[in-house]
Length: 245
Image (cartoon, rainbow, N blue to C red; front, side, top):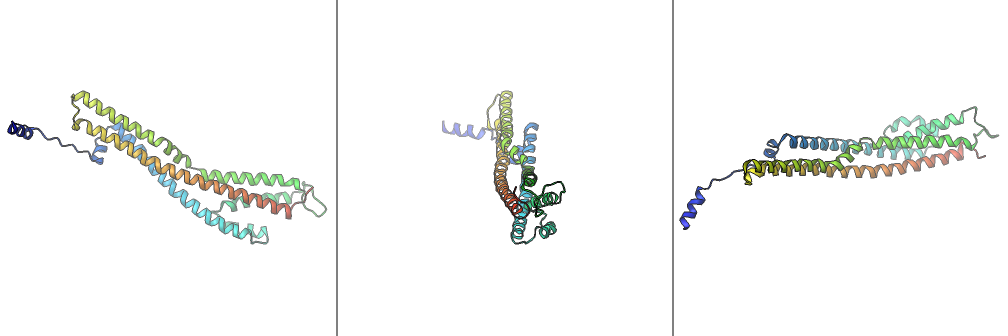
């Protein structure tokens, strides 16, 4: 009995299935390959946006620190405006430039009511406040640009990968139905490409979510900085350039 079992085992054909990642991708169906390509492209875009945004925030932070340091030490806003081109990467400097130009326009307007000491009355400050708010919103909008790609990848990446997973499993069941066999050689390729689609979907989505949340946090801090600067600038202008009613 035992020798017959050994002979049967030796006579059984050996099945070799290559389930490496590259082979699974190369042998995957066109639909799964297209799904993987979309995920890879999205991932490349996310990393590129992450790198450029990181550099943008780094330069902006350095320029903002230099400008604010100069702003609180300078004795004349006119002299600070003359050197404004030195802070091209500073969002605070751009808000200051817009506010300064509006302040000069208001102070030089012949239509604005003035006091006896030739100072514009406080009602002219409303236009200046609107300009500061608008400049702040423009800066925040610039910082938020292209972040929608990160948000879209983070929210849709797992579902795109899941679509590839479902398609790969469907292909495996289809082959089982065609061959009438559920052996490893039949189901392994479809299952392998399905799992790869899931993995790449998560690999694209997780960094996108982390980058998006990190940049949103930085933008909110920058918004606070710009709002605080706008309030400080208005207080300085009220004290030195405008007179209350």
